Length: 137
Image 1 (cartoon, rainbow, N blue to C red):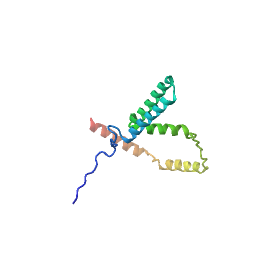
Image 2 (image 1 turned 45 degrees about the vertical axis):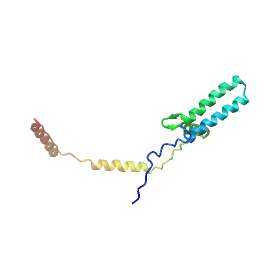
Image 3 (image 1 turned 180 degrees about the vertical axis):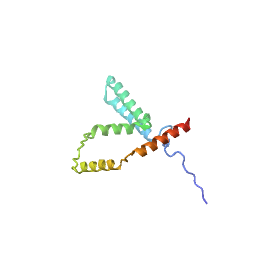
Image 4 (image 1 turned 135 degrees about the horizontal axis):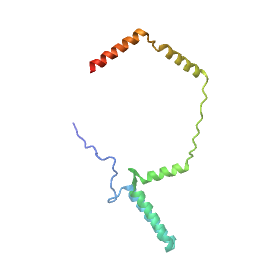
């Protein structure tokens, strides 16, 4: 019978470009390309703040995790939350009157099921409680 090796860590992405996964490398490379484009298009006093924002966003997308969720998923969920409508309407269903009849039948059956205590049953119960309390002492 042949034996095969089963991968142990299938939830961990492979490191392809040095210490980076493919996604991390693409986020960092895209951020780097945007910074180079900003350097060409913007004057120096606008370039440095733009480069800091773009670099921070690229690094955050590549490395940041919140509650074990990657930041691109959190960013996607935030965008969908802002774009989708959030109006929930609840309509109360009006029920017919037969429910009241059911409640009356239930209360009538409860009244019929309550046992009646007679004088002899009450005295038997009192005697058994007296005996049990004396046995415990």
